[in-house]
Length: 343
Image (cartoon, rainbow, N blue to C red):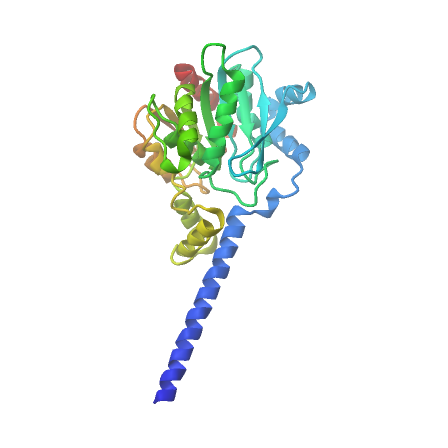
């Protein structure tokens, strides 16, 4: 009888250990798959520029011109985490303080956002700054941050844009426009930058960060988010089911805890839907009605969470991050009207 109990106990322990090992291995795989995609390494940016121009042929002449004349220039900073981060900067055709900070999406680099840069620089005659997010493009970093810690970097870049393009007496007038993960980053930023003179800053950001955010509260006038997700948790839960046919429990829970241990943030923390609820500045929400990567339903939840002023445009038939390519004229006009009203 005692031997049977020992045998059962041993089997239970072995099974538990096996389950833990499988969960840890599965969590490591999920984090590596989602946050450290191999296609981010050794990318050919000249080839990607050719692809970009083939997708948006109307930007080809402008793109060639700003590159050949060296008007589009590189800059680097040391980010808050000590890594070296990169951005592209382009001055407006004539001096102005109107500026767009354009935030790339998942695995995209600054070069991949030149089609949005075209709208602001060529059509609206504005300065643009396009950063490479952590671990993307030419920026350092081991793993992507799904727009959460990226918000701190984008706030730093926005401060740089303000210092570069402000007039002698006034701050720059800035719109932050993000796409996909960049849209999530933009929404996360919107919850940290105060709407008025009193900063709404998490204590973890520290007093220097609070000062910086208070200053940017008068510079950043509005936001555009194009096909962003409600939270990293929601997006990973959806992809886990869509790609692998798996429920969120228990793998997503263990992966989130492991991400917290390794990179200092959890999937539940990275929640734009909570950040937009704190934002009182104007925001334009854009999504494609046929988006199956970031499901279209997410934009309605985000829009509902955001206090006014807010605007929503769902482009019929467009898949993920394809609204501009499918509906060029209307997309440009929406941006022109929105930015014209608030900048």
